[in-house]
Length: 499
Image (cartoon, rainbow, N blue to C red):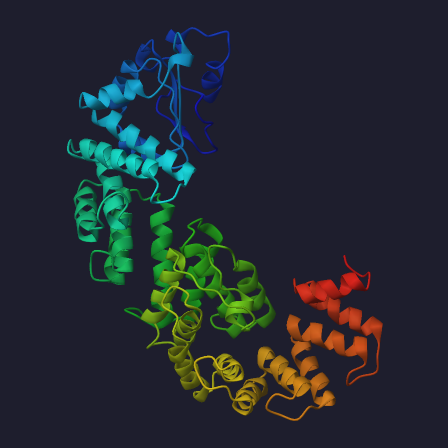
């Protein structure tokens, strides 16, 4: 068995079962004539775990290929997740030479198989781009795909289009990729419809057009394709949010994003949708406002793939840059809605500030924050305050910083309240006042702000502005630590109170 099948897998034969495949690996071999596909004596079983393989080869081609390769054992994972288990007199002698020989003789299916195997090798090795070995394998991969594509092999053409789209092994030619996808879509290949939708969605090889993207996603003949369906749901969330082509509706946007957040496994649309669900709860858009839950969603959604969490997005506590596909998509979506919704414009500025999905431009970010701050948005007021405090995108000005923080705090923004307390604590833009420190830290802490909770605990630990009280300090440290704030966790450890 080259690889194990997974829950939900299907077989290419009604008489084939996983237990039969497992039996082929034992020393006591069953009667192969009872396990064959249409009584082909060379075949034990084919286990196909997804529709990609079924689209790559029709059943007759599979039978011919396996009839030729009685000793073949291959596994195309993780992309195709195929398990092939074949009877052979001498399993130890099986290698790719059988496949290579048939590819040389013009067998398109063999060429396609070899290309996919090489892709798996490249993904596993992850060697540097300038490595001769990788370059050689990429050239071989493209040659095999071309050989199969020239015979009208649909999945070879599909993967070749992906190479042109991303410039993998060939000069990047996104228009050619779109041409190939369009040709395959006319033949009813679901993956091609979805790929075209993505091209229109991102503006790769065609002019960006979200309505056309949705049309292509909707045309996928495989009505059970969750991938295509959830991409449609995701885009409809954005279109509803900004009122593009449809009536603006926060309720509809939130509903769409929640569905993607809970059902999708896509590494690009899932974290973006989840991030926006957090903002909707934080701001009370389309749902009852729950700031703490919104912050929690945003914080816990942060990952190596999507690096915007609470520290980077709500409270400028750390910075991150990224040119990953998910970062670029997030910035483009925010930019698309920036003239329709203040939050899109604010998040676009956050991306510009960090260099997240775009070139870093803190002057432009500060300009956007200040415009939105003058319109009265408390989160933007907090951010422009930070820009003035640290001299990022504007000239450093502690007094201006304090004024903006104060305006944010007056609107009950917990981050503004926390930072006003911090300014009073450190004398930045205002005279030190320890009573004011505690007052503002408490207002923020009582809203669940983990940074303010930690600082308020420190006030009680050392008796700054309040009578010293270690028990009360521990209480506030614990509230902060339970939200994952490392500084509070460290303080509790020193006090012997964690975990």
